[in-house]
Length: 176
Image 1 (spheres, rainbow, N blue to C red):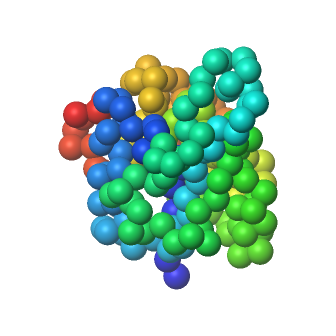
Image 2: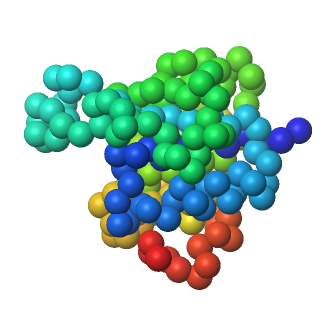
Image 3: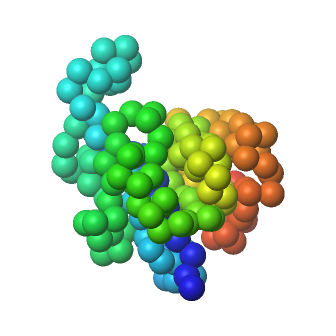
């Protein structure tokens, strides 16, 4: 049986100079390793959200910013794209799906390592689902230091052995 892969928030609104390499790496990972099912989350910044009120950040409210990046869109089946608002971590529908399918281990890639990837990996851990994070297929919109900070927190909270390299970095620690 194939292993499930969760692609966290690899969406148009989160692509910048620090994350631009992630869509191609994730597409290569999918082509190379044949994960199934492919599960996606996407962040939608709802009106009146804490991002609006506390941070005065108003992006990712609608398409195209909330859309899955073009490189991954062909892999995204509508029933396996789960919307979330904020640092809520796991959307309820995704939690229900994982429990119904009795998923015991889930591979994770995505954006932002220090925020949504971290929160979802820790939520999975708390649910008793083993999260495996491919570190070279994650990045942070805030840059390398934020990415590394997220990995440090994940290492402590889910265990360093659950942080793995997919072999797709080409020897580069940061965005090429």
